[in-house]
Length: 479
Ligand code: GLN
Image (cartoon, rainbow, N blue to C red):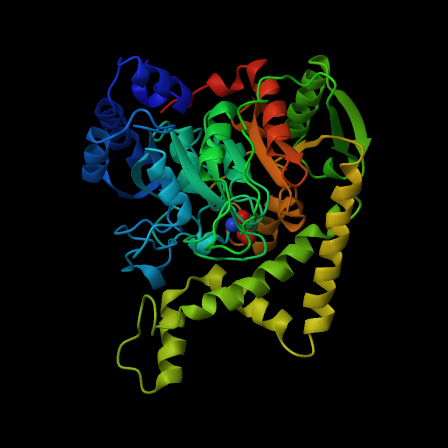
């Protein structure tokens, strides 16, 4: 078995038994990247030289000592580009490390390279990147999902052992589902966003892509915890996510919301999810029906609140302080206008215009305020549901990976790719996606496990029980 196919956990034991060295791991990955990334195009930029140096200096006594991790291009790593796949940040170099990056460094991880994404994390297919399209490792004519498509594809293609992404409305879970890996969106406040380029600040969370649930628990553990530099990060310390991991699901109550099995869902996806539910039942979980009645409003609410917040967050890119500056401006308004017109892509412009509209006087009450109220109702749905169960099971995405170009001309269809993931961000709870089967075209299907606030241990435990009783996670794409 080649080293690049291993997990964090298996490499950790090989490293401590001195069967391999960190340099051999990095070299194995660099070779793999050289051979398959021209097809996948998951990486935007490689840290090869530095990764080898970090490998030689790795401290193997640390939890991620000698383990290479790939990083989404919206997290600041000092000295690296951090473009958010946008022309407006084409020449930007990070001046500091995001807190999650400092935590990775403290844990001994090696920073391998930067992964492709939808521009400013807006999208579900990574087709909105200014630097080209990433391909799905299971079928290179298809999208890898988004917005963290690069981070998912490089783990799915075994070009990284694990990676970090960000999730505002599904951007970790949906690409993880489509690329056949595990993606975790922690509870809002669990992980610091200091150094994550903000999209929608009331929704954004950082989280890991891994090949197994155990690796997900380990990596989530490393990046969690209070950060005085992010005042939305919770004061409480993260519990030990690994300690309960293997306790099984016997006696756990798992909720199945009737609103998540909708018309228009791919029947193969539905079958995959129904089989997984049955599997968990046979492992001893009690399946209960729950209701999340405001699910239908989630997409509308999200696209009002996320665009409103994005329009405010992206105001800082004005050609003066960061990034691209238009040449020969006639005055300051011309400088702002042209720098932004030249720097932002069309989806980002659409969101800024929508967000500015819903915040403008006269529309603020009708859209923004009303959306805030419906967000409360969605949150209450989850609070009620979690009185009846410990975790909720749903599909992650209504379809498997779609073809490149299939939805890129139809923003509304693209927005509907998130119908099962966005309510989780609106309610500030946690969710993960893990492989639960394949379609007849051999495209991965993802099971979403949603937990209450601070319920990561519960969803990881459910995920572990399921994963260990199936072999989906052991399948590899043919590349
Ligand atoms: N696909 C959603 C959007 O386009 C979610 C993106 C994300 O989670 N960053 O906004």
